[in-house]
Structure formats: C-alpha cells, structure tokens
Amino acid sequence: MTKTALITGATSGIGQATAHEFAKHGIALIVCGRRQDRLDALQKELENHCRVHTLNFDITDREAVFKAINSLPEDFKIIDILINNAGNAHGLDPIQDGNLDDWDAMMDSNVKGLLYVSKAVIPQMTERQSGHIINIGSSAGKEVYPKGNVYCASKHAVLALTEGMRMDLNPFGIKVGAINPGLVETEFSQVRFKGDHSANDVYKGFAALQPEDIADIIYFAITRPPHVNIADLLVLPTAQASATLVKKEL
Ligand code: NAP
Image (cartoon, rainbow, N blue to C red):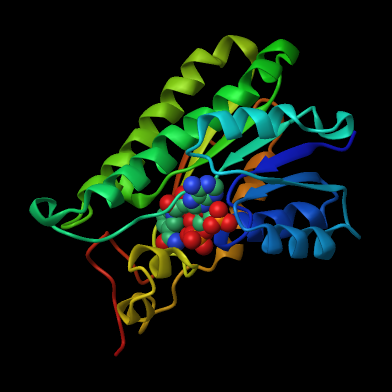
C-alpha cells in the first residue's frame, strides 16, 4: 500500500531533496514550510509522481502546528513517516556576544518545533502501533565547536529526544532514528549569516555534501525491512574530519 510521509522544511535544502526522492518512489507527501510560493511550486513539480498536499505553518507556533496537522484531508490523515527536518542555525557568535533572538529562534524551531510536530503526529502512530520518525540532527549534536554554543545545544537536544522517543515508543513498534549530517550545501549558511557574503565562503574549496546525498540516505533508512531501524547515523563530506577540520583546496 502507498505510504504517506510528512516532511517539515520541504521548501529548501534537505527537506526539498527528500520530497523529490520520496516522490520518485510514489510516496504520498505532505510538504510543510512557511513559504507558500515554494510549496506551490513543489506541489506542481511532484504531483505527476505522487499525491501531494501542502501545509503552511511555523513549527514554533504551537497552535498553528496542531491546527495544520488536524486540518489534513481524509486521504492524507494517516501519516506513516514523519521527517522532522525543519530547523536552522541563526548566528555564529561567542556565547558572551550571542543574540537573544537568535537563541530563541534556534531553541524554538530545532527543539520545541520538532516536539510540537511530533506531539501532533505520534498519537495516531501509537494507536496504529506502527510508524517511522526520522529526526534530522547534525554533527553539531555530537560535537560542539567554537561559537556553535546554542545551535550545538539544540542539536544535542535533538539527539537526546531521538533516544527518548525511541525508548518511549518502543512498546508500540514505532521506529525512531536520527540522521546527522556534517556540512551540506543548502540555504543553511544564508540563514545563519542572515544573507551576509561570508555565507558564500562556507562551502568553498571542498566538495560539500549535497541535499540529495542526505535525501538518498533518508530513503535508504525508510526502506529497511520491518526488523531493521537505522537508529543514529553520522554522515560527513569526505573532506570533513570534524567540525573544525575540513581539507580545503583554496
Ligand atoms: P535550509 O535550506 O535553510 O532549509 C531549512 C528548512 O527549514 C526550510 O524549508 C525552512 O522553510 C524550514 N524552517 C526553518 N524554520 C522554520 C520554522 N520556524 N517553521 C517552519 N519551517 C521552518 O537548511 P537545510 O540545511 O536543508 O536544513 C535542514 C535541517 O538540516 C535543519 O534541521 C538543519 O539544522 C539540519 N542540518 C543542516 C546541515 C547543513 O550543513 N546544511 C548540517 C546538519 C544538519 P521555510 O523558511 O519555508 O519555513
């Protein structure tokens, strides 16, 4: 039977590439984000391959999350796969210079937003005793780097929540796992540096991961046999050995 996946942050980067990958395999899609023009364009592109429904909401807005997910039409109500991908870094500052709005934005989206969306979807999974949740963490969830403070904390929280969810949902046969990428060339750095030109330098001089690389791995994870759960996976560009060690040819 055709499965349905809800992907947050499908308007860009990893989420968008995942929507394309899933569509190739006919998985019905609920694509989420705040930019309606991009959601519309994605729907138009993908609907020759699969059924597509768009949901526009801010994951940091608790009421909007529940309203959006509760509004799903009958033929999209059963969510088999949840990809908790939406999130960003905001700023790269030493802790003493950190911007409170940046801190709020990261904790609100990367941690609380992921929780709200999960809370809205999990009850139907526990009721059916099936489902698969993949949280997009980060290498920043495994290793802290200078000036990464709050972003790293938010992604460490994603890993803790992934483990906690896997334990609590274990009696229900629900798979929970985290995919943790290193440097992926998306709009991530544009957002982090607020459009500043330094964003362009992040991916220069080495072959960064592309969003399609991560989408491919996510598709691999959701297509393992029922007894196999990819619980926690770290994926780096070959040129990257750690958060601060990247072999660049400049
Ligand atoms: P991106 O291209 O900037 O995409 C971020 C996505 O998240 C967008 O679709 C954005 O959609 C959505 N989003 C952000 N805040 C949101 C909010 N408050 N409400 C709803 N949607 C929101 O970045 P990306 O690299 O693909 O990032 C995807 C995930 O991968 C993030 O969790 C990020 O932390 C993680 N990650 C990225 C990297 C990397 O190097 N790129 C590495 C490790 C982990 P709208 O703006 O339309 O709402």
